[in-house]
Image (cartoon, rainbow, N blue to C red; front, side):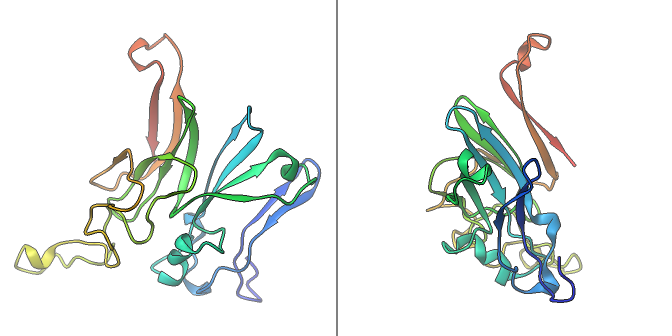
Length: 212
């Protein structure tokens, strides 16, 4: 963050070779930037020799920032595919692998698939199977709700209904890649591991997700 220029941006640096790999432009709407939402979950594919890195849409109630997730010209709100040659400073190739991402905190591989856990808005945390060119909907599709959309003092239940104000799918996720699972209440999911041990045999080769 450059406070003098009111500029918040993301960089990726290979500290082993002291090489700047990626520098993104300033996030718009500086006063509503929240870098807690940048995510940063990643997984490295040893066979393809590629890094899959999640760059979130780091916002606090800012449509200008959240809509970057659907902007094909922006790396914010995306999962990026970065070949090893780029990580080593030998190439500039970086590809957008998936779009519509809010804040992915952890990624892992499971049965040759890329699995990601993502923080949504209130009640919208997800587990997603990340596929190439998949669009996961943010900010136009979520099972979460706006933190400020409910007034607990209203008398009628329908008036107190929580909803996501710019949801284009009527809470269905139709036309977007749907999550494998979404929590109804906010749990604050964080890390994701694949348990591979016979010590707890029933858990072997299962996903374990932790919470904040």
